[in-house]
Image 1 (cartoon, rainbow, N blue to C red):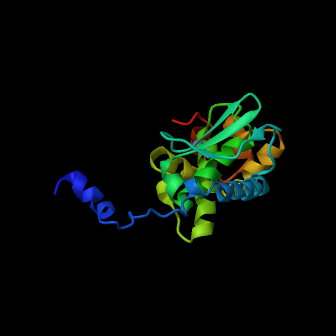
Image 2 (spheres, rainbow, N blue to C red):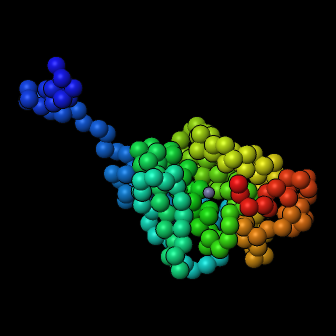
Image 3 (cartoon, protein in one colour):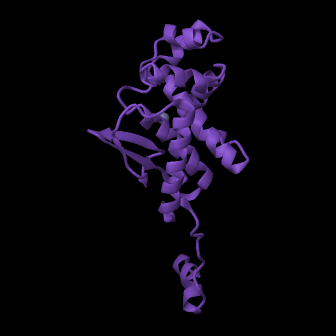
Length: 197
Ligand SMILES: [Zn+2]
């Protein structure tokens, strides 16, 4: 039997084709957008409110990305990737991550601090919703950023306090970070305030 014959034989025999599950995020955009509203509300609760009045559009799925938030003028778009398209836990982790970037309005290059906080929020929300910790959502340098952020005592309250003083995550200085989080060492503070990667 040729490759094509084996693939199509069930159809020739009148059997229904194998179906793929339809309850994946990419086929349930309304639910994805409901989660986006919940996650944004939670992000604003733990990190403080948005510092801008740009529009954050409902997230969409885009090929060739593993999640990104972009701003054009006053409109922020969030693209979710292939893995988030088919796995709810990854979808929550990715959406939560990108919403943290969106909070400060994407006004500068991301720092290790901003990436670490985005990972901590996304992975944390996904873990809370699904009862397992999806560390695979923070690979390589992202995992390193997450570890550094985890070493800051009460990191969400610390960043919320800095943001309340008008200091976005992409422009915190090491001395501001050390003053806000006395437990942190100088080398970690310096690295966290550098541009990511
Ligand atoms: Zn990021």
